[in-house]
Length: 149
Image 1 (cartoon, rainbow, N blue to C red):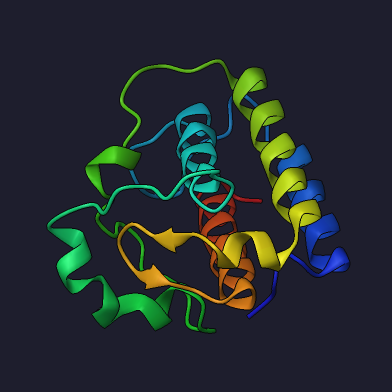
Image 2: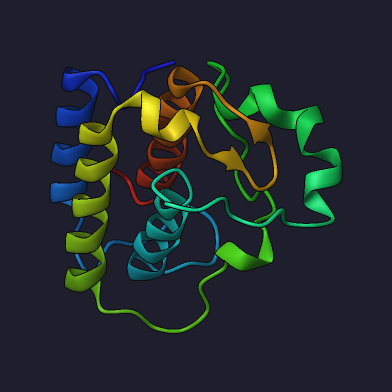
C-alpha cells in the first residue's frame, strides 16, 4: 500500500486533488464532490488532533476486527458504512473544501509519522505512523476513485 508520508505519493495525491472539478459526478455513493472533500477533511483532523479524539461507539467495540483492512493492499468495497460523525449531509463550498483538504494533506505529510502515531484512532485503535500514512492514502484514493480521479 502506498504511504502518504512518501514524497512521491504525496505529490500524486495533490495532483489528483487538483484535477477535481465542482461538477464532478460520483461513480458510486451518495455524497457530492464537495461533501466528499468535507468528509475527508474530517478524517484528516483525527491524526492531526492535538488531543485524543473520543471513541466512537459502537464501532470502537469491533473496529479491531477490520483494522488491517484500513492499510492493506486490498481496495475497499464501494458503499461501505460511514461512522455518523463523518457523514456530511449539508451542501458545502467546493473551493473552500478542496483548499482546506489540500492544506490538511500537506500538514499531515509535513508533520510526519511520529505525530500521527501518538493519536489512537477512535474506531480502530492504535496505529503506527506507517499504518496512519497508508490508511490516510487508502481513504483518499478510495474517494478520489469515487469521483473518477
